[in-house]
Image 1 (cartoon, rainbow, N blue to C red):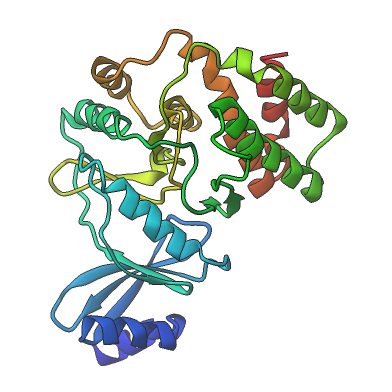
Image 2: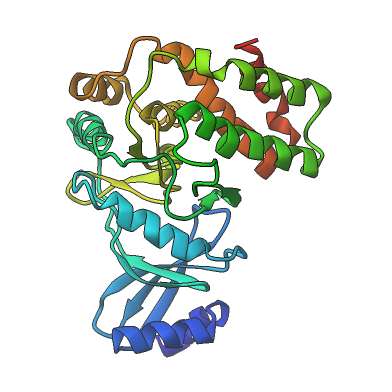
Length: 298
């Protein structure tokens, strides 16, 4: 047992280990790497008193773990969906509550949809967030620099679509067709979004099937957020990108907090942001879908 435990620490930063031990006031006796993330190294650690924690390290991005901690803490405010408790964070690591996973029961997606709708009733005065953060490994701009309180269509173009286009141009993934398409969308975005006006709503920001868990009580748990206050249709659109949500989830959501008419038409404008982000993160395999989504409104 001694040799097994000693071996596991070869890939865990000693300075981080000592910081965590000092904060917890007990020694870490094991550290096991877990899969699932493509940005940070993730581990489950266990202490001498048999307590387990989840640790993220090695993001390579300034403030990423502090940003994630702030996002998780923000999601606790409506008190309707479980998120991992933040234990400790700094620029080099994020220490979280370890959540034992369980099996989805018959009412899982119905209760999840209801709770997600309840979360979206938590609002703010302005779009954005008090700090910029990340969507995956891509910077996500949230802070107010638009010369006063912005409308949602202004915020969405200036802080979401336009930065992604600039990243694509810098990364060599853009084209004249894509840049012209995004430019045309700017001129008609107010018309595309007309009729869906709502107060700024608390968003997870990056909700796909890999960013929620089922705990050992059969309840949904939100993880890996990219929080800001925006339009809730943007959150729901992201859930459609890779699937993983049942029709029961959407029906439960609509029963508890119906969307404005025309949400189906607006869905692609929100998917465009996420496909452009995947273009920038993973390459040209996402280019054609970006062109298709932009072209839907042209």
